[in-house]
Length: 138
Image (tube, rainbow, N blue to C red; front, top):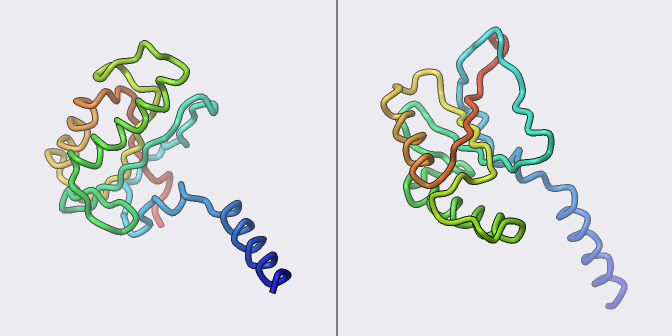
């Protein structure tokens, strides 16, 4: 029985190590806008990325599930603030958070709905934003 449990534990450990949660958080069904000068987001490894997927209806999609915009961003901001306070104890609620928000919006999303997501993030202390786009048409 012990060898079987050992093997199962090793398999669980292996799959936990190779799982990429960042790619799982991206909604690949979104049709991103096409911009010829689109470049990848580069933070130099200095900052975390918060990926927000916004569909054509203006809904925030997290792991293929629609979520409430305000409560999700508030929870993420609180978690990021707690982690950031370990290195900078003087950080307070409303201060600039050391995270870049990557907005992946469908190309048919009206700007008023996209602006609601950006405004909610700004109200929680996020100041750095990046809008995702495609470099060429699919």
